[in-house]
Structure formats: C-alpha cells, structure tokens
Length: 528
Image (cartoon, rainbow, N blue to C red; front, side, top):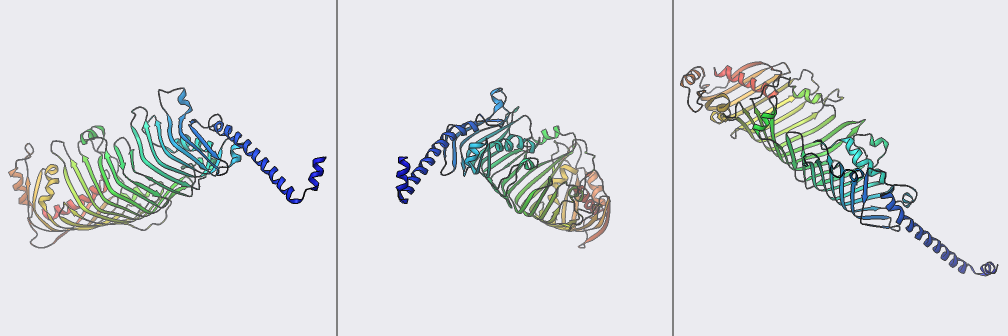
C-alpha cells in the first residue's frame, strides 16, 4: 500500500523513468533467457534434431541477436550412415572453413527445427561426393544428396559460396568423375518447396553468378572434358581452354568398338554464349541463345576402317535437329580462326589419309530444333577456309529443319589446289598420288534423304596420276599408272569444264560421304 501510495504521488517524469527501467529489465531478462535458449537450441537443432541424412559438427558457434547472424567455424559434414560403415564411403562428405547466416528469424530457432534467414555464406568448402558408378550427376541424386537435406536445416533466400572445391569420385576406382576448382557461386531469390523438388532443377531462383578456375568431367567411357576459367550469369556463359580428349589411344579405341566409329579430339581457346535464356517449362528443357562464338577451335576427326561397318541409317542434319526432344534456338553461331582435320585409316601399317581445313571461319544462323514447331526459317551456314593449307574455299549450305524430305542445297568454290597436297590423303587411302593444278572447282548440289543432283565444274592443268604397288607401297606400279594417265584428260585447255551429276544416297553413310560422292562423280565425269 505504501509503494502504491508513493507511486501515485510521483510526477510523470519519475513514472516514465521507472517504466523505462522496468521495461529495460524485462528486455534484459528476456534477452538472457533467449540467449540461454539459443545456446541450447542451435546445437540441438544441428545435431539432435537434424532431420537430414547428414551429421554436422563444428568447433566454434557464435551469433548475435542484435545483428541477426549466426556463424560456425571448422564445420564437418558426413553421412550419418558413415558411422556404421567407415570402410566404404558413399554420399557427400565436406569440410568447411566457415558458414555465416545473416538476418535469421529468431522465432524459427525458438519454435521450429529449421533456421530461416535471408542469406547464407559458405567459405572454402571442400566437398566430395562418392558414387558407386561412373555417372557423375543425376537430378534425382542432386535432390536427394544436396537440396532436400539442406532445406531441412536452413531456409534462405540467397546463397553465396566462396572458394569452393568440389569433386565427384567413383568409390570403386577412387578416380574423379567431376572436379571443379575454386568455385564461386551466388544464388539469389531461392525457393524450395514440394513442387520445385519434383522439377528437373529442384529449386527456383531469380538470379545467379557462377565461376570456377578449372573443371574436369569424365564425359563418358571414351572422353575426358577439361576447361580453365568458366564464368556464367543468367544470360551469359564463357568457357576458357575447352578440351575434349580421348581416354584411349587410337589402337586401344579401335579394339574397344564393335563397329566403325569416329574418334574426336576437340579444343577451343574460348567459347562464349550471349543473350542466354534457359530453363524448364512443364519439365521440358528450353535453351535459347542469341549468339555463340567459338574462337580458335581445333577438331581432329579420326575414322578407322578396320572394324565392321555400322549399317544403321545415318540421319541428315534436318532430321537430327527436327527430332531433338527439347526447345533449342541459336540465332547465330560463329566459329573463328579454327582448324578442322579429317583422318581415315584402312590399316595401322599404312597410316591415315588426312584432309585439313584451316583458317576456318563459319557463320550459321537460325539453328533450331523441331520441337513443337510448325514453321521455321532456313538454317544457313557460310564457311570460308583454306583447303590443305593453301587453297581458298567458300561454301554456302542451306536446309530447313521441318522439311521431312531432308532437303538441302550446298554450293561453293575452291581455287588453286596443288594436287600434290592432296597426296597426304590419297597415298595412304587410295595408294595413289596426283600432281597438277586444279585452278578452279565449282559445285552446286541440291538433294534430300534419297538422292542429289546438280552441277560440278572444274578448270585444271597438267594433271597426272601415279599408282603404287600393293605389296610395296613405295614402288610405282608402272602398268596401272600408264593406264590411268591414258584415260585421264590431263587439262581442260584453259576452259572451265562443267557436268551435271546425279547420286543416289547410301543411307548407312553420313552427309559428308554423300557430299564427297557428288564431288567424286563430277571429277570422274570430267577427268575420264
């Protein structure tokens, strides 16, 4: 009663001061209580109430209610199943220098088993995913091993990963299937729910940035893929020093294939995609690109003729693009300062015949798949290069993806071909050499999946053929050489000679075989 009476006679300033002190005391007591609660709740949430398949441990845990952050240092993540079977590793293992969560909701810590926050920053994670087979990634595995477990512990809008190292390792061979070094990732506007977890990409996002210093990927049983710097945003992608290299030598590759198959060595100094838009609509992939530029590419294509022929039908490019089961659209593709080589070998003892196209510049427009399309512009390809390092060559190639007859037109010209330079192909492959000059070569062929027709024209001087002995390829076969030169017209007397050609397509052979047979038919009709 005494206190109440005294309180009543206090002036408003005194009452306000006491009220503030009482409020401060209550807040202080609540803060102490909340801190004590969080001291117990956070470790319990990360360890005892962790509903994921992974155990999480750390050395230091700090937080600030005022600033709304949580920071953990020296984190280790291992599968909970690892305790029962330490001999065989499976799943994701990680060590992390630090994890910092910003703008977390205190109520999520107090009244749920999941931390809700604005962002999480993961610094210097070393991540290894162990797999039982050679498939480096699969959407279902990504959902199960990474996204779903993460979402059970932390719900955030933004994720930042700094200086990461990530590997996927085959548990049987202990060899890396995938390795990315010094990865930096920024994902903003993340949304994870039951609906996104059922999608090809198990989370939605508004923007992203990705970079790594180098990457390795075991593309399949025959190839390694490596790159240096990769940088990507929502609408751009650049890849430095791209290389696709065989896992086996040519001899070993031939022993492993049941039928004829090309062996590739491909590299590019720089690959850049601009105005990139990709994603999934109703689980269907779409990839739209304004421009693709590939600089200083090198492609060596090797075909050994020793294995049996692959007698399956080879579709033309119209059908290959028409039958793609996703929405592809590339407005412009440019290949600059590149080199293309094709090698064919009948036996290892004879060596391979080789055709080279250098200073190779290509521009292709309107590269589209036929997926759900009713009308498309023609795909047009323009090529400028040198044939066998000396002869200027220009090609124009046109087709329409939706043309079910697989129609095409290809026209072009080659100038000043020294026939002796083709001997690198004709000697090992045809056991013959040529000499003379092909001053001008013109061709204009129109065809489809069944046949082709068109004009072939050539101007040449002093053309001669030398045929070699089968049992000793270093010695001239005088009889066949004489017969060959008897039937070959050795020049066109300063004129351009033209002829019409018609060729039936061999369905088991590629477009390039079809094109070459048109050229060969024209040469035969004019030379003989």
